[in-house]
Image (cartoon, rainbow, N blue to C red; front, side):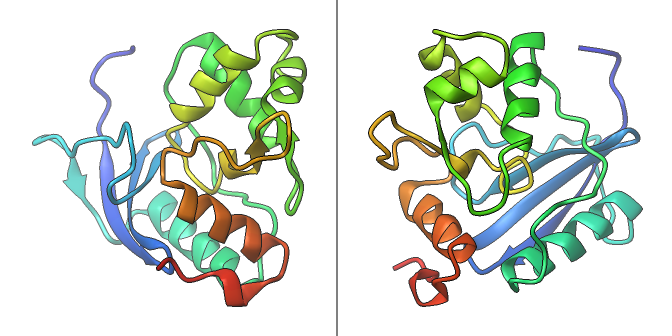
Length: 171
């Protein structure tokens, strides 16, 4: 990891619960649901900034997404991870709105055919929920397996994209 770059953060209230948004100078580096696995912890040197341009753009685009008005995100991304993880996250980013692919297909798209389990592990470490749509990755039989934000949220996000808003609320 590079030197300690300044981090900015803010909170966003989504229909699926509070989200922590984190940005660096290069772009958005984290979008985490409250309570999800592998959530970043706000460090003492991070600065909360409700007016940070990247964070504001992310909040606006997330609001449009949850409101059914946005199918593609444009905010600059700067996820931190290994080269393998970044290649998997880039492949996830290419999965279109309302589509799903299997972990095996994801591994192949990332250039690592036959590495479905490793692609699944990298997917679980995706630091940019919703915007890098790991909820669109499903098990080989189409089942909703594993989601760091919880399977209820995965189901709700896929329902939103399938235009079944009555399925959206988390119980």
